[in-house]
Length: 405
Image 1 (tube, helix red, strand yellow):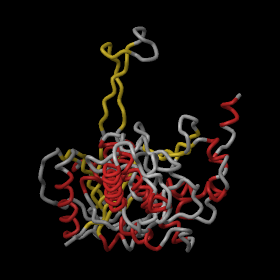
Image 2: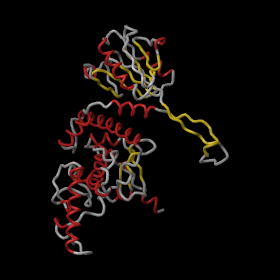
Image 3: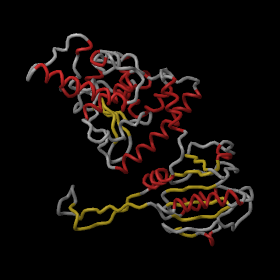
Image 4: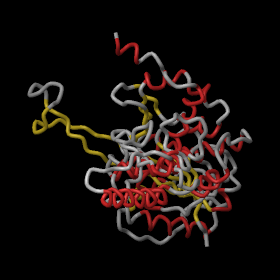
């Protein structure tokens, strides 16, 4: 009965109302699963190690005791941890977890109003002498210096004698980092964290577009806004993009094996051994509107991709040229070639990929054709900067621009 009492408060029922005037954070919130749990004392955001998706764990009793203003502030606090990649980035080597946790909180709490009283805020309590608007790394350096000074003072005063914490400047560092939990930060493997980082970029892009459409960023400060936009306009890292696309496209194929114990029916049924692989299709637009310089640029990018993975190349214009489809093996280099020169129909390669069961589909094109039918697998578009700014159709799928110089 006690458990039921604690589980009464359902955050999912309140989130939309709490973030009504925060379009940016409301968009981020839709991509974060809210999970009630009494195993956590307050709240905390993490990457699910199995799905590489973001979850906000929260204690219903903790949220039930907050005011609406505090609930909104806690939500924004957790989402800021995603914005600044505190959840996916591992803490600096050799640094105490507690110090890094406090530094991360100090970096974001100065941007939030209405936080619970035990929040770590620059200029308040034991952090009275700390400036606002610094990075987590800068606050970490200040915390380390403060800790060193405290230890030296205690040593001078004698063994066992500590400052009594009276007065703001004399307060010692807290034993915890405030109201939220960071215990699950950085626990995922490298692949999981990399996928999560790419997902954050997508979520931030969606949230920024929604804020601009609403002509309001809510409580997001100008400083944070600039940093968010800068993160979205950083130079493309092909390795991370391809690895993200391949990893999130892969599907699990299972086969029975007696060497692996079935966890549910031990020694009764054979276990399942899971092998994971992705079949990636890359369709190259060879229509008349795609000139030779664009084709050369596309093949130059494919030579980079081939250093990381194998994929199937599908030339097309208004139709797929099936006799020219080939497997581009990992490590191979190829020269660009033109085998077609007709109109453009994105339905043709989409239908071919849908029919042949690929796991991911990348189209290299100038985007100058009507919007295609839905794809059964995840689809991404590769074009030049010129055409990325002037697409013939709108899509929520990812569009990557390359230099064509």
